[in-house]
Amino acid sequence: MLNKMIFLDKELESFFSKSDDPFKRITEINGTIYRNTANRVTKRFSIGERTFFLKYHGPIGYKEVLKNVLKFQLPTVSAKPEWRALEKVNSLGLDVPKPLAMCSRGLNPAKSESFIITESVEPNKSIEDVLDSDYFSGSHINEKRRFIRKVAKISKTLHEGGVNHRDLYLCHFLIEENLDSEKPIYLIDLHRAQIRKEVPNRWAIKDIGGLIHSAIGYGMTERDLYRFFEVYFNKPLRKFSKEENNFLKLSITRAFKMYMKPILNDIDISSERINSENSRYYKKTEENLRYIVKKDFAENFKNLISDIDLIMTKGEIIKKEAGHFIVACDFNGERIFIKKYQMKNFFHKFRKLASKTRARVAWESSHWLNSAGISTFEIIGIIERFNSISTTDSYLISRNIEGKRLEDMKFSLEESISLANKFNAFFKKLNWISFNHGDAKKQNFYVHNNSLIAFDLDSSKRRVFYKNRYLLKDKRRIIKSFKDNEVILNLLKIRMDSK
Image 1 (cartoon, rainbow, N blue to C red):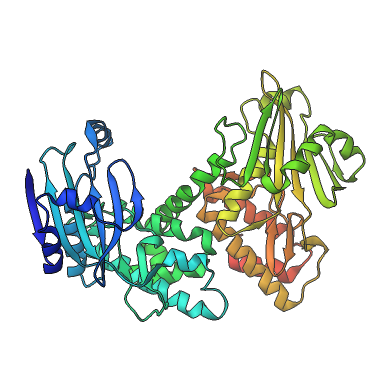
Image 2: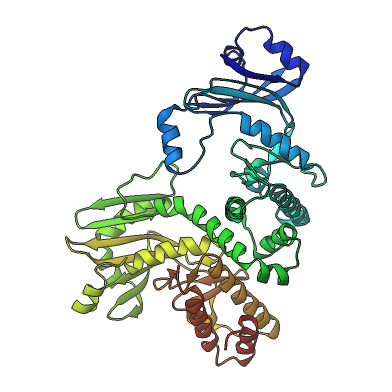
């Protein structure tokens, strides 16, 4: 039984009038399918020279309804919310695909079905597609900034108008194919949007966190974030960084947690889950040994594992202490570093029973820091030996670091200012991801291609509590390590406000 049919387009109305059952009619439409799941179909189709998008919502079943209810969420069971959201967002002066038809039948949310048809925005690209093409680098940097401001203005207007998107990612911002930043940006996929008189802070944070998350893998800079928030809050940097500090902290934290969740699952050496074919990593567990390695080094790694201790005895010793042993060696035509972490004594072993190995800490930390745009040494893989009680030894294998170690460099005044600015940005990015380095001193940093490169990450940690205290320790330590260079020392003190 049909409950509701709306046609705002005569051509579509005529098209559907040729069938008694509009739901049967949509199955007969040929087009390009963009999504096809158990209860959702998204299809692009044409009638004559006009192009449309069809979104079909089928029955979701009682199990899905119950699952959402137990999570205190309303399940998406109909095209009606998107229809209402498109009308609302359009009334705010934002550009959305024009809704042209909507049809629904059934009152039971577990068994109902519906569809919506909108005008297709042609030709178009998502902002995510443009970022994938690396278009915004180099000479197009000013266009990137204009798009950042436009996306911020759309987000601001959306939230001030009482709408939270719930899927606010860059792939849902469509721009014309010629990438003219003066042309409209269309916001799409509003099927989960919520409409209220006022958007609660937590939902605005979820939206903005999701938006930042979708930008993380594309070289998002500190200044990019500031440009976005200056428009979103309509306040200068100094003002919004103080007045909106909690919003900033929560949205950025959410963004990086979302970004890192699949990566952490992928690089988890202890997980029995098999990595997908698209994974960059290969992992294996054998008797009393497990390892994970980048796929481009996997074959060499297998040969390395069998003779790793012998290979280390023939390498160039970098450091040899009770807790760890570091060597540099040439292996299969490549310069690599091997760092072996050993248990010092019984008390050290007892203290480490419930802890991750330091190799694993460095492995995970490097991925966290890379997500925030911090360059680190490239870890190829890690190895852990274990027994029935705990891990015993662990190994961290990394590629040779290009560049110069800070402790071996001399700096002009201009280079000193640049270095101080790099450390200031480094600590701001650590703050984004709630991390501290743990051993921040100039001996643990390189400079290459004008980038600061961090290594020795086996003491790094994500700090849920007392983050500022640990960051302050890091700052004080890096400042102290430059006590022999008064210029850099004073520049760091000024920028970090650390006494």
